[in-house]
Image 1: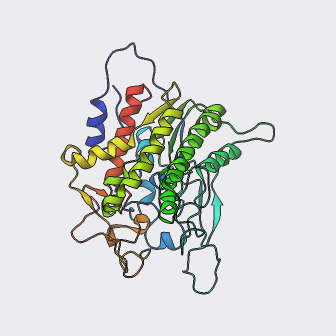
Image 2: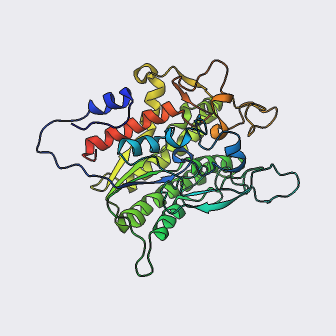
Length: 372
C-alpha cells in the first residue's frame, strides 16, 4: 500500500480508505511531471508580481507568508504535485496588464511585463475562459483589471510550443499527470451577459459550446499529442459559495449555467483509459451539506476580510468586493486564523484547507482508477 508524501493525516486517512489490496492489480504509473491548465482555482502564481506580490498575495486563497510561500502548498495542484513526489509547481507565465501602461492615475505595480518560464508547467491563470478572451478580471471587461486571462486552449498551445524542437512539433511525454479545470469564468461571463440583456438560452448555449471546446482540446491537443493520464475536473457548485448565497433566488441562473456546462463536458468527454473525470460539483456540494464530515468549521463566511482598506483590491464602500488574490494572515476577518478550517477564502475561492480537501478527492479518484 502506498505511503503518501503529504503530512496531513486527513489526506492519508481519506485516500487509504479507498485503496484495495492484492498483488494482481496493474502497476501504477510513475509520473515524471505535472502539467496543469485552467483558471484561478488552479493558478499557482501567475499574478505573484508587482502590486499583488507587494501586498502579500499571489494566489486566490489565503496566501502563505512570502518567506515560506515557495515551500508552502496552498493550492490543490500543489498538494497533488507534492503527494506525487514532484515538488512544488510553478507558474509558466507571470505578469500584470492594466491596459493603460503607466498612464497617470493608474495604480503602481499593475503593469508588469509578461515573463515565460519554460521550466514551469502551471499554466492556469485567474480569470481564464476555455477558448476566448477577455476573461474575468481582464482590463477589457473589468475596470482596473490587470489579469492576463490567457484562455485554456492557448495555455495548451503554449505548452506544446515550449516543448517543440526545430524538427518536431511539441508533444506530451506520456509520463506526466495532466490536470484540467476550467469553465467557471465562462459561466460568470455569460451570467453577466444575460444580466445585460442576452437571452438566457443563448447564455446556456454558449457555456455548452465552451464545454464542447474544452472536451475537444483534451482529446485532440492533449491526448492527441501524447498525454496518457489526464484528470478533468468539472465546475464546483457555485450556488453554495458565499457569492452564490448572496444572489438569493437569482442564483438559479448560475446553477443552470454550471450544470449545463458540466453535463455537456461529461457527454463529450466520458471516462476512458486516458481520462479521469472528477466531480468537483458534487464534492463541493457535499462539503457544505456535511461540514463536520470534513472537519470544516465554517462553510458560509469568508476567511478573508474583503472590504477596503483591509483588502486593497476592494472598492471603497462596496461590501465584500475584494479578492483573496491579496489575502494573507494580515487581513483575515476578526478571530479567523490561517489554520482555521474555513471552506471559503473569498466569495468563490477555497482556503488552503478547502484546496487540501479537493486534492484529497482527486487523489482518491486517481487511486480508484489505479493511477496512484
